[in-house]
Image 1 (cartoon, rainbow, N blue to C red):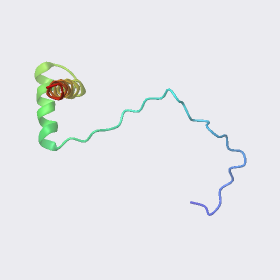
Image 2 (cartoon, one colour; image 1 turned 60 degrees about the vertical axis):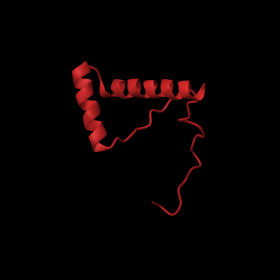
Image 3 (spheres, rainbow, N blue to C red; image 1 turned 90 degrees about the horizontal axis):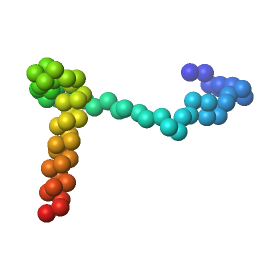
Length: 68
């Protein structure tokens, strides 16, 4: 990287999009990833769908337990 950069012609906020939604990567342990892959094949769906379904169920369980 240069010691000095010329930003005199730069445009502030040129790439800023307030509506942008980011999908952050989630890294699974190898054993869990393999389980998810196998389950996705059995259900004939995408692996991300399997993960979302499992997380939704966990969310329901946690919400039910919190309402006790």
